Image (cartoon, rainbow, N blue to C red; front, side, top):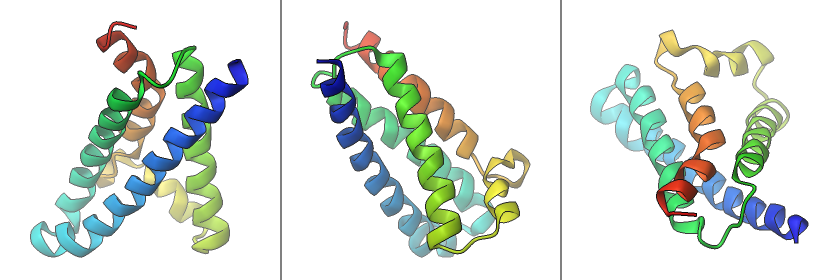
Length: 129
């Protein structure tokens, strides 16, 4: 039963990851030309946090607890994807990848990580679970 929860959580995370990629494409192709890179980056971060919350809100009925553990799983999967894909597939150097944590530059990835961790528990509570 518990293993089933984490498989379901993985499937939901894959959907979130796919939407995150779409969000990144939207940022680069629409937001940057429209509002500039300086505003596009934080806007995209807020949009991704909202995407995580929305997907979690819809899917939490299908997902059973332990919700904080699911959030932790999603957090680890997100970091592994961000750094693994970023370094070994996109060939970005480690210092460049670490810039995703620089809130002063407008990157709200830290917000996305916090929302990712808390979303299952928050949305379950909101849904009365």
